[in-house]
Image (tube, rainbow, N blue to C red; front, side, top):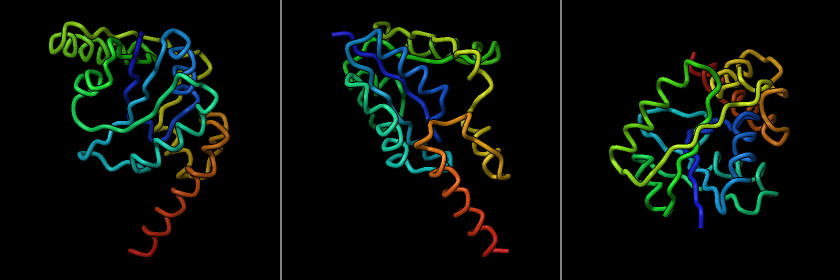
Length: 168
């Protein structure tokens, strides 16, 4: 059975992420979307919320499983009994970092390969950071995230803005 893991923060999941998930899931028997729970960062959404959002937008993909993890991606890949890590490349600037990570993971476990997907051109400029910034200032994010995610992003941003306003 060919199993691959697509790790990331997905804070929030974007149309670019969903494009990679759909394309990668067509090539493997099972795709595990691994939502990184990184204690060093303060995400907009909890790991559980991010898992739920991805499950909501991938429900039609029967070979996609979503779960969160912490620690090294390569350790999570081993726990999933996967042999492939899926990564998306938006621009040349992503390549240097992703190549370094792929080589590091390969040096840790020589049985794990990384598969790179180039992002569809219409999603190449989208990042989770961009989505959050545009939403923070009241901009339209409907072109950036799946429809099921739009109100969740705006709702979370409004909560943060209200909290920030009450502390001022």
